[in-house]
Image 1 (tube, rainbow, N blue to C red):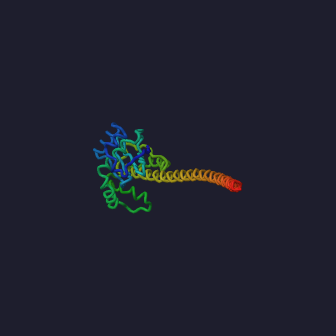
Image 2 (image 1 turned 180 degrees about the vertical axis):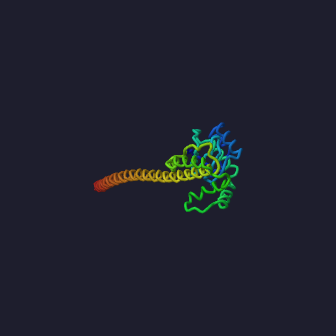
Image 3 (image 1 turned 90 degrees about the vertical axis):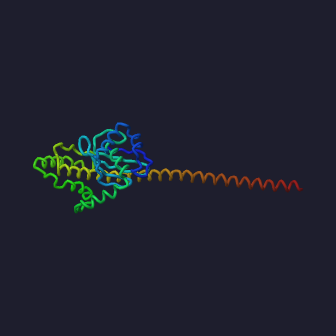
Length: 255
């Protein structure tokens, strides 16, 4: 699910619990706060105005991308929830930002530097640390490999197009489950890039529309200025005629 709402805050850490509860309502806030308290939030990347995270929800691990731009808070979660204006998982992430925002960027960067492996694609390098955390935790068995391959084949056609990828089988665990998280993280980044491109396109169209409106107004003003100049020239002629008449009248009066 993807949503946008107006927001006057300048940083994500300024969104305090009371503000969040007033926006999402008591029930959604309660679930989000519970997820945060249970330490189900995993920060993948964060700074003062955006965060990419994962939350271990009731039915699986969901990916979140939250950005705070000028006057707009945009949230995206891979969960199927219809909660508005954003879901409990985003609430949990924003609560994590509020309580830990000042130290998030440094800790996330340090974790990435310690765990990152070589990769030619920057999108891959941003996602690999998440996989590295569980590297060697559980060996991938034949059945998990079959389930993972089947899931990937279904997910490939949706990458960069849909926020929610196919459901992950409950029996998929260990390394395969971590790689599912990597793919979901990459999908979030692809969607983010597409959203940024669409935002630029919309802003460009808006600017072109404004230029067109201003051009038409300028044409109207030019027409009004020409009319005013013509009126002014007519008035000048009348004034000259009156001055001539007064001069003639003065001559007649003197004689």
